[in-house]
Image (cartoon, rainbow, N blue to C red; front, side, top):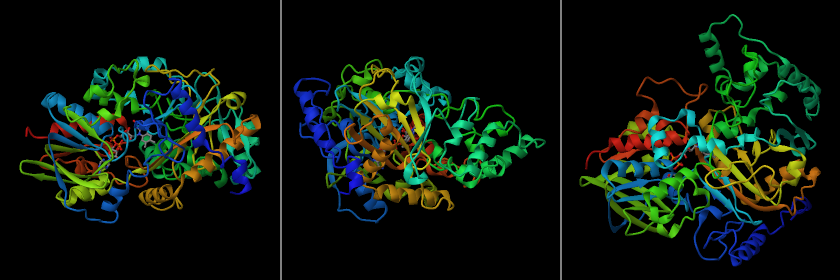
Length: 628
Ligand SMILES: Cc1cc2nc3c(=O)[nH]c(=O)nc-3n(C[C@H](O)[C@H](O)[C@H](O)COP(=O)(O)OP(=O)(O)OC[C@H]3O[C@@H](n4cnc5c(N)ncnc54)[C@H](O)[C@@H]3O)c2cc1C
């Protein structure tokens, strides 16, 4: 190990520390839920017996063991041994245990009755898909964070989504009362900008500065501290000070067309007067929200995102009205929308979490050994990758790989709630045009790395709630506090252990190539990175950002959970890269057509990366099934 890595604490056994701590807590009967198995930073289970995936640290999201079978099928065209028929028969088999698959099971029972026998097959070791709970116990109190899906974008919900959430006991007003996280606009701490030494020559934390700059104060002093050229700093100062309409005299349609045909960063240069260097600072701001850099998004798509633009479009505001660092009005659970997945699992399989409801959900114990109970009408089978779905004998046959075995079950109906890009490989009998349309869905790689810190003293000293990091792998970092809902509380004045969430995507090696090529290249980079690469990255940022305020990078990191999502956001059409299709002929509309007893769900079916879309598409898919 080189000296630099040693100084960063790369040789520190955070795994061993987890082990000792979790065991001492468990022996005292404290903090750890009964039977919880912790996991080391390297991803190995701590051997205290019972399987409880949310506490696993190390490489999560698309974790080792989850994707190899799918890649062998889809990338390598591998053929598998003939399946063994399992002596099980279902009314419905669902492929994919994300929100859409769980909602499909829920709607199926509503339509066909509570006796309907349902099997949900999921390739990961946890349910929820992107809605992933990260649960930490190192350091004493349980701390929660989200490993993927974060927000409920409730103003966009359909009546049916509102109805389902009400049935699950979710009350948005109650969630809003406990929601003080607000992506850095909460009661304590301020946004900052962190320039790192490796990229910019010196570490510089510019406090009380947000790119969005929703406040109207003079930003010159802050910009003077940016470690970039004087010319670039001056261009930024002028840009932030301007209030005008650069399209004065043009019609609304003309302005719309102009904004949709120019990238945000080109807009900044052409109309905002920024230098290339200054405009480049904004590229990674949109990584977390859009899964793609601001140089590949149109200026129109960045209105309402957390970047400044409207002050050059005749509005006094710097960003779109209602814009926040979450992109708009949202409500939240402390583990993100994993809570929705947990509520759905509880509704489908009450024995998994007896007594759980929306008032105590965050603390409710989920017994994973009861997910696949032979006596229950609904079963959820983890670590099971589906490799074939076929219409057969007035029903369907579903073949999957579990623990190296190739198994087949029969069902009346199947709902494919998995990613659309794999459906042509699972279901070769679909029409060619439909398979082509499914291949159009190239999901956007995303990254959520949660780091549990021993305390928030340095963060509090610096008055930080989050920071954008224009030069780093993760474009943004947020302090995770203040989501005091569903029975969980972590107040801002609590200076104990605290998760910080590193959020973003992977910058493609070349952002001038078509956006789907960018996604594929970013995905390859993401999959090639080791846990140590991510660990070194977060240690470097935390050391540079918090070190001067007393943070000890060697000692103050208790756990790291990397949630990598090579197949992240559903592909939503982009102004700069996709044509306008006639009604009913967009790829997602062709891709989701039912075929015999097989219907197709997932957020991909709505071409929008939202939880409510995943639910709406599940409802539609179930409604398309015949009576069997
Ligand atoms: C980091 C991140 C942040 C996000 N933040 C938000 C947010 O704040 N708000 C929001 O509304 N949305 C957000 N999303 C979007 C999110 O995708 C949706 O909200 C929603 O969770 C999608 O649900 P889904 O069931 O359609 O897909 P998924 O969650 O992807 O679930 C599909 C499941 O099918 C499984 N699967 C695939 N192929 C197979 C197979 N062959 N066999 C078995 N299983 C298979 C997959 O592994 C996966 O678990 C976020 C996504 C990511 C990645």
